[in-house]
Amino acid sequence: MLDIDKRQVDFLVTENMVNEIRTFLERDASKVRMFAVEMADRGIERLYFVACGSPLSAAQTTQFLVDRYSSITCTAYDGSDFLDNPPSKLDQTCAVVAISQSGKTEEVVEALKLAKSRGAFTVAATNEEQCPLYEEADRAIAYHAECIWEIHLLVGYTLAIELISRKEGTKTELDQILQDLNKLPDVLDKLVNNLEQEGKELGKKASAWNFIYTVSSGPLKPLGYKEGVITLMEFTWTHGCALESGEFRHGPLEIVEQGVPFIFLLGTDGSRHTTERALNFVKRYTDNVIVFDYADLSQGLHPMLAPMVLFVPLEWFCYYLAIYKDHNPDNRRYYGGLVQY
Image: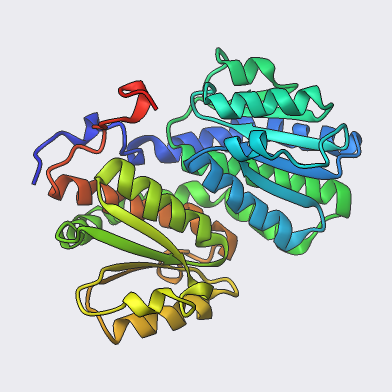
């Protein structure tokens, strides 16, 4: 097991997470809502998100919310996809929200420029003001935070709920989600302080696995990809694959056998039974199964907040998985310009 000071590890964002979320809700949420008001006033018909990596997964989660609770056309694009195959409808009736922590992600910046050249209303969400993305957008917010998963979801949810309300009227369930967002800091504070030991034990268990399949559905599907591919590969150097619960019986079930490792993300939304079906099948054939269940951690929060809540146990788990593999999650071989890509 690697012996390092976790306070010096940039990957681990639990220390400042709660304060960053509180700050966003108190300082920045109102600004994001004004972006949505302007979109409604402009008669925006289509909402596009453009991002890469973890920000793209957060944008896809917001797309799920918009699709689930409104008739607004919403699509989340990888930056390269947007540039290589831009949507045919890209004009003044469209809004493009570009998300990048650094504000320098090349394909995201270029995608925003393309959208702007076609007349779309552009919004940027990034960490600092001094960056190309912030400077290019019609409207921008610099949130000054490191817990990007939580912040990017808050940006997306806040904007989407306000836009839906302006265009389609107030909806009871969206009001509940909005109210529960304000409860999030206290809920996450408890989880950050109570789940480290469990994460340590699970990380130790999984450190013997050379690869892991991560299975999820519904609003947890993007988080399943973020954790099961992006985080496992980039930060823990573990081979990972993300699988959709509903598609599990259509191919993936053939690889299930003793010793094959799985992580399951269980939500409390309508897709829960679909993930449980896959989980019950897997448990019949292998003991290498870890389950993160929102029902055990939600403290009454709405099912759409599962991606925000389950991030905490997954953060502890992935950190200790890396440590038990003697790998500092801040160390990369190729990322960040160390090797030309």
